[in-house]
Amino acid sequence: MEQRRTCKSQMEAARSGEITAEVREAARFEGIEPALLRDMIASGTAALPANRRHLKLEPRAVGRKLKTKINVNMGTSRDIEDAEGELEKVRLAEKLGAHALMDLSSAGDTRRLRRTIIETSPLMIGTVPAYDTVARANKPLREITSDDWIESVRLHAEDGVDFQTIHAGLTKRLAEEIIQRSKTGARLTGLVSRGGSLLFAWMAETGKENPYYERFDEVLAICAEHEVTVSLGDSCRPGSTADSSDGAQIGELIVLGDLVQRARKAGVQTIVEGPGHMALDEIEANMAIARRLCGDAPFYVLGPLTTDIAPGYDHITAAIGGAVAAAAGAAFLCYVTPAEHLRLPTLEDVREGIIASVIAAHSADIAKGVPGARDRDDRMSRARQNLDWEQMFTLAVDPEKARLYRSQSEPSEKDSCTMCGKLCAVRNVNRVISGEASDVL
Image (cartoon, rainbow, N blue to C red; front, side, top):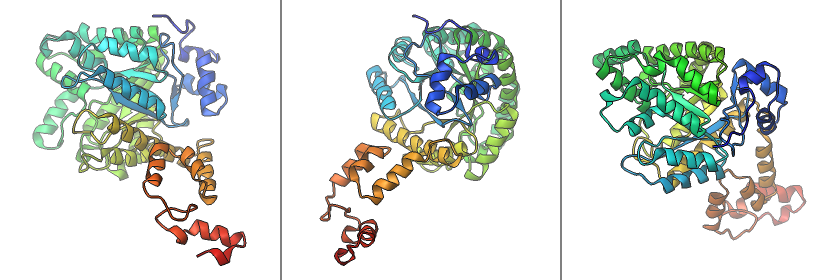
């Protein structure tokens, strides 16, 4: 594969005062000065994932002070190896305004699918090499070697992946703590991180330390060579609201903070992943703790899901938590679909999950005062005041659904809808203001 760029890494360039082409493009998307973004990257408070081999990439930066970004998970499983179906999800994610994709494939020709996505998609591409290690090895977990885990990092980097989730924070000590907490009932859901659980089981079967933690310097060397951003996975993230903010979650976050500092010294950009399931009133405090412990590295959250009782509707629980988290400092939202906890998502599940995350991210951007975040809302409000339906559809987060709903229930009064008809407040106030009060009803 060709390389898009042969200069210094983004962090090295930023630290030397240079503004790369990728920084300029990402800053243009943000509506900020390139020098401001460069300084964020130099300090590690923003990351610009951009593998040199991802030629089609449209660079986007992730950071607390920037627009909230959205990631879409996709990928094959052993039960459903439909590569073309997953590529449809990629195209839908691009259409609906997602900023990143994570290929979580664990079955079939994973490398071919990964390379196809990288060669065709302009979105940031992420992967979880732990999944692929197991898929490629195709042997009992205890027979997988430390070298196998590291080799997956190298392969994904060589293929052009922009960021990788590396579960380096789950040490043998933390794994033992999870076992003890689970046995005593102090933790209800053990580990729910797929990658974390694989390493947890491997450590239990082999008695060895987590290779991603033990050989973290090798991981950093690979990522530095190929310009891959490390997304530090949270193996101990809470899988239930009862487990949130417990010693295992916070203990791992402390380890991740140390790894962030090691990565920065090596000139490797980092993102830190976070919860998980979490009660609404704990989210803001968790964002503050993460910022403090991890040097304000960009924080990437799954949800958080604010309640455990909504299977089939977890895109809503995640959007509620995501909006609060991003308003409080999270930089990156991993979407959740209605199929979470239930099945591999369909194309329609993906649509609903993306739309929910777009709404959450946009709501947070308004709350944290991102420049220009309110502009689209103001234009929508003017369109509503003018009863300009076509403009409303154009500005809607999901124009197709908005147009469909209106077409399914045609009003007798063309300048209103079937909810209010002649009693429409906007219609009647407009007529009064324009001097047509006698024709209100």
